[in-house]
Each structure stands twice: as structure tokens, then as C-alpha cells.
Image 1 (tube, rainbow, N blue to C red):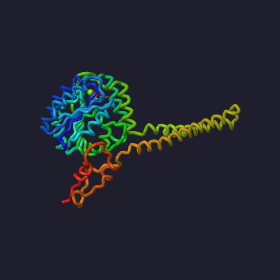
Image 2 (tube, rainbow, N blue to C red):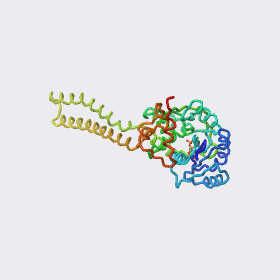
Image 3 (cartoon, protein in one colour):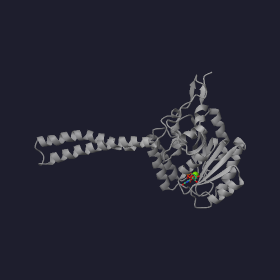
Image 4 (cartoon, rainbow, N blue to C red):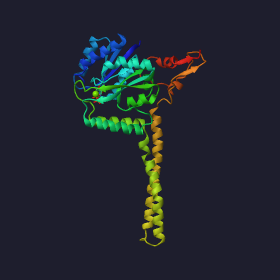
Length: 348
Ligand code: UDP
Ligand code: MG
């Protein structure tokens, strides 16, 4: 049983937003696809009345499902839980605080159809009601990330986006523990188009991202999409090795000319050679650790977007080619094969 659209909302201490969210999001879904939608609210271990309100809403509205996580797992994992449970052909991700207007849904769907995109991601033109500190740190973070990350992660985006089932299935086949969802979406490739919008202030309550969580989020993002911090030692090692050559010439010529006290030459030589070679060795370890790390994330090796072939339409595209390994879908039906086959077009 699928629906045309799933809206997935992670919620942490959002009791004052939920009624308004439910009303506006339901209207937006109805305006976009009629009655064939579902809303999944995920309670991420809230300590206020969030779960009680969610249960009331779920009792009243057959299209709404409320999911209660056993404790606070953090925004990205709460979102992942909702994504794993949803059944929609299209998936709309939105925060509970109504900073991202649900009313944009219809336009985003239209854009997705018009451009045949797999992902339409919201990109912020302005951020209202956010502190200068948040804007400056967010800006610095996205700059650093785009320098370090192996894939282009678009700036000024959050998780506010619309995704196809195909794109979501690839995300769900990525078993990594530390999940930076917007980076994972960028990583899969396929056609992704930005949708510019203005971000409103929070409807109620205050940000659930204090500095501590922001730092952890940034570290997850950078380590999840870059192993270049591990290369620091390699670079330092190379620079040190390079610098030690003139230093050694200076030390040896001082010794040859008899300008030094006994012992100085040998001590400086040992320190220089050991320092440089240790750095080089650390860099070497870093390279291997980086490879172990990447391997341990067990991401698909590659993702095939389309196959055009003379073979009959449901040509068995081995899942290995689509996903680069047996897909590990936490939940769901046997939709993976259908995903592969649906995009294999026979040459007429
Ligand atoms: N959130 C969550 N778990 C957390 C922190 C936040 O599910 O541990 C949710 C929160 O309820 C909201 C979304 O993640 O729906 C984004 O949080 P917030 O709006 O506070 O972040 P900001 O917009 O300030 O970056
Ligand atoms: Mg917010």
C-alpha cells in the first residue's frame, strides 16, 4: 500500500507548533495531491506535551501517524526513522516549527514534474528571526564543508525538500550510523534542483539546536563527507621533511666548520629526522584509517540512474549494480527490484 505523498516531520519539544503545523501541512498536502497523502510525525524523546498532542492528532486524523522514539536520538535520526516508515511515492521533509512554509509543496511538486528531478531542495534566500551568531556560524560551516567534502553539498539548505521514492530508497540503503541527511542526499547524485524561498521565523518555541548540538552536527557533517582532516599529518610530514633539508645542511656545515659545541649536531639531526619521519608515518596511518572508515560506511559503490537497452523491459538489473551491494532496507516491502526495473527502458 503506497500513497502519493508522505510528509515527514521530526519533532522535539514542539508542543506549541503541532496544531498549527497539522492544520497548515494538511491543507498544503490536500491542495497538492488531494486525499492520497500521509503525515508522519516523529516524536524525538520530547520532554513536553508533544507526544500527548501527537496521539490526539493521530486519533482524529486517519492520515496522520505518530511515531514515538524511545529517547532523544537527535534531529537526523528522528528524520531517518520517519523516512524509513513512510510509504509515499514522493516524500516531503519539513521541520515542525513552520520556518519552512508547507504551502510551497504544490509548487515544489510541479517543479519536480516539470524538471523530472529526483530531489527538489529548498534553498534559503533570507533567514528571518535567526541570530547574527547563527547566520555567521552557519555560513562559515557551509564554506568549510564545501571546501572539504568530496561531493557538492548545496549551501543555505536544510532538510526541507521533496524527494522521489527512488532517491529515498538509495538513502535508506546507506547504513551509516552518523547521518547527515542533506549530505547523503547530495551524495547520491541524480537530478536535484534548488527551490528558492524565504525562511520565516519559528512559529513558537525556540531553536532545538543549542551550540553543543550545532558543533556535533558540524563534526558529523565534515567527518561523514571528508577524510581530509586525516591528511593533515601527511601534509605536515611533507612540509617538515622539506624544511629539514636546509636545516640539516646548516647543522652539518656548522659541524664541519667546527662552530658548534660537541653533541649539538647529532642531537639536532636525530630530532629533525625523527620528527619528519614520524609525521610521514602518521600520515600513512591516516591514509589507511581513512580507507577503513570509508569502507566501514558500506555505502553503495555507485548508483545507476537509467539503463537504455535492447533487452526486455524488466531486464534483471542485478541489485548489485543499482545499489552496489545488497540493499539494507530497515523497513518496507520488496520495492527495491521494482525501483530498478521501473527505470529500465527498452529501446523501441
Ligand atoms: N529536532 C529533533 N530532535 C532534536 C532537535 C531538533 O527532532 O534533537 C527537530 C525540531 O523539532 C525541528 C527540527 O528538528 O522540527 C529542526 O530543529 P530547529 O527548528 O530547532 O532547528 P533550527 O531551525 O533552529 O536550525
Ligand atoms: Mg527551525
